[in-house]
Length: 419
Image (cartoon, rainbow, N blue to C red; front, side):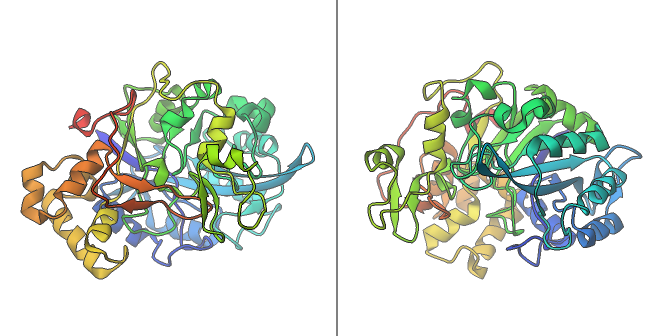
């Protein structure tokens, strides 16, 4: 069976999240999106843990996958590690997947002596990455850990503000227990392929969603082929980087991410890496250091040219959420009722947003809304024009007549390849 999975989200107990990030709303919106499997997020929070333990039922004994009204879940959480290493303050977010509630409770018993778990769904812990990974794997070998949004300036393992230059530098002797990284919204697999040191790691794509809306949840996700859905099978596929079972990832264009380019949002300054270097990475307005974005960091660390594709690389496709297209075309607020109503027409016809964006043919789309057909097709073909995001500001879809023309790059699949 084909499983579309978003393994990294949050609950309503995390800071700056929607109150609607509860199990019921997550199930409703995930189905609209076209997802099959969600991480629960925030299992370190005692109240959220009580909620999910009460509502989720294990699909089969000891399979590690749980369900609620037709939606599958696996137990997941995120921690923020803040510590000093080599006289530099490090801030790294890690995602943890666990097979059982018993394992989660053992993790929480360990962490409650380190921090106040009730303060945030994503707790902050003063502990190094190697020490943390060693302890979590010691609690259970079933626990699986990967760096979240690996390239973001703050809290990314490779981030310009507090990160490292390699996975080895970060995890040291515990690198052996790291098998994957999350690329984040501001990078895509092609950018990560430029680092030969990442070849042995599986590249995961997840939404890190703080709200259930379809412009957020599942905006990045992973597509697996599994004989039966189980935690052990999922982790095995990821660890083995099994391209026969890990079919592809779904990405937004990295320009859409909030940290793709360099800049200063307060100064309204946005720069590509070449422009930043000419200015010695100093803001031309306030004369303070720029927030160095993901593209810049990739250029700093890359040892391969653009367009390089490693052997057995898992392919990817890029699409923007349907609501982004609707809001821009009709000049509406992204979260307006009208956008939801137009989106609902497509979902009612094709079953989900992803089915609309990936599978519906041109004639079928015209029958729903002929004004959006051109944008949907350009979305599939990677021809949308996007103003890059920077310093915490999302990228912006532009509707100029002149679009970005480019060929499909090696490793980046055309939508038709998956129909």
